[in-house]
Image 1 (cartoon, helix red, strand yellow):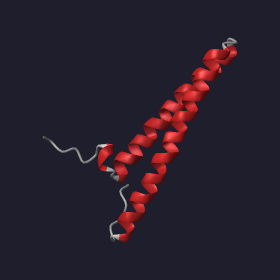
Image 2 (cartoon, rainbow, N blue to C red):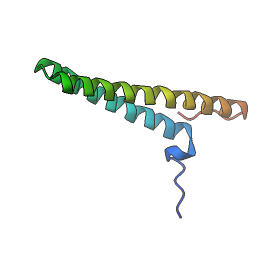
Image 3 (cartoon, rainbow, N blue to C red):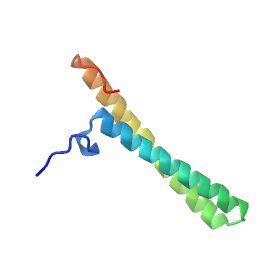
Length: 83
């Protein structure tokens, strides 16, 4: 089995940072869809997009907490955080 240290399951700052970016991308996508649904008067689509954008943003915030913890752990060990 090949190890992939940049996979989010390893919790490295780089992997966590990448996942936060993906979550923000999805939040932006769903927000844009919500704007379109609102413009055409589709309240069901607007609600669904709003809920999905909110879920993606909550996930990003949750993983940001993990990233802060990972960076704090690295600093405590005397290692510089990843760029």
